[in-house]
Every structure is written in structure tokens, then in C-alpha cells.
Length: 261
Ligand code: NAD
Figure (tube, helix red, strand yellow):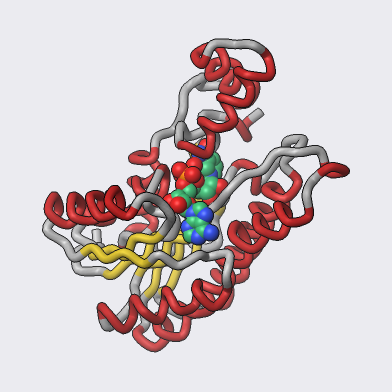
């Protein structure tokens, strides 16, 4: 593993999958810039816990990544603070569920801005430094919804398909360098983003939380179990390791068999 001493930005890492990835990279010895929303006291507790547990430098950047300028500034700030940026994990994302004809335009715009355009802006801002130094690892958290569709998730599915396309372009434009770009496509992972969908299902169908959870899994994920943020963190770490140097432009599923069907 060539992760010790690396500098990583993990977007949307105050919660869920991003937090799992930040923690996995810190456990391998990377210094990490956290990003995301949340209660400042809780975020500071996460920051100090990761720094203390793994003996690495952990910073926090509160950029709202639906804003291109803040996204690009977050990359510049990381380079200024640490002198370079080696690993970029584009993870921040939100969901909204509605049939297309009722899909609110502002929700569409926000999801495209955060789930897709922020990946472009962060990548574009990070690549010059990575090319100059001759090393980079870009990991984009797409989704099974980057590969297949579900009804009522128009903006999310469009954005995630876009992320996989952008990942492939990034891999081709960096092919002559020791810079890789890959996408991870999780199925259901039990995070606040998915808990909100379980709660909505329970409410709609008059189910208990446990029944709704089982129904959600049974619909899509043959393993009938969730992937975990820690497992996705391990996969992201592997993609940042020397062993993964020739994995480029891949869209790797971690989905309990969802897309094998
Ligand atoms: P989550 O809600 O637990 O975390 C989302 C993170 O993004 C949080 O840290 C939040 O503060 C941050 N965030 C939200 N809006 C932001 C903004 N405008 N600027 C900066 N940060 C912002 O969700 P999660 O389930 O951990 O999702 C993380 C990523 O994984 C998303 O891209 C999501 O699409 C993807 N994903 C999740 C699942 C799943 O089952 N949970 C499956 C496939 C893909």
C-alpha cells in the first residue's frame, strides 16, 4: 500500500460512506481533508477522533459543493495547507424521489450540481497539481444507479450515469501519468440517505422499520444485506494503492448482486 503520507480530500465525509472512506484512508496513514454539512461540534468531534486514532493530520473544509467556486477553492485550500493533493474522493451526493413530470426543477438542478458537476469541478481543479507532481488517485462514488435505472430517480440516475462517463474520460486524459480515475458503484448502504427512503417506504406502506428495510433490500439486492461504509472505504483504499495502478476508468460494483440480475 502506498497510502502512508498521502494527502486526501474526501467530499461529503461528515456522514455515511464518505466518513467510512475518510476513516479507511486515515487508517492507512493518509492525512485527510473532511468536507460536508452538519453540526459543527459533531464535525469537530469526528475530526479530532480520526486524527487521534490514526495519528494523521485531519482538516475540515465546509464548502458547499453545489457551488463551483467553493468546490474549486476547496481543492486550492487543500493544496495550500498540505503542499499538495494526492487523492481526491468525490463522494458528496443527495437523493430526491419523484416521477419525472412532477420533479421540481430546483431539485433537478441541485442534484446535477452536486452529484455530477462538483465531480467535474473538483477533478478539473485537482488535475494540474497531480499531473505536475506525477501522481494522483481519483475515486468517484457513483452508484448502481450509474449502471441501471429505477423509477422516480431521474436526476440521481442521470447524474450517476454522468459520473461514470466522466470517470472514463478522466482515466483516458490521465492514462500517460501515474494518475488513475475509477468509480465505485455501491448498492444499498445503510446511511442517512437510505434511511430516509426506508422511513418513507414504512410510512407509505404502513410497515415497521424492520419490514421496510427488508422490503427495500428484497426489491434490488439479492444478498439481502447492506454493504457498509467501512467496506466501501476498504475498496477505495485499494484503488489508491500501488496494486491498483492499472485499474483505470473502471466502474466497480459493491452491490450484493444488484446489477448481476
Ligand atoms: P449521507 O447523506 O450519509 O452523506 C452525504 C454527505 O454529503 C454528507 O457528509 C453531507 O453533509 C454531504 N453533503 C450534502 N450536500 C452537500 C453539499 N452541497 N456540499 C458538500 N457536502 C454535501 O449519504 P451517503 O449514503 O453516505 O452517500 C454518499 C455518496 O454515496 C453519495 O454520492 C450517494 O449518491 C452515494 N451512494 C450511496 C448509496 C447508499 O445506499 N447509501 C448507494 C450508492 C451510492
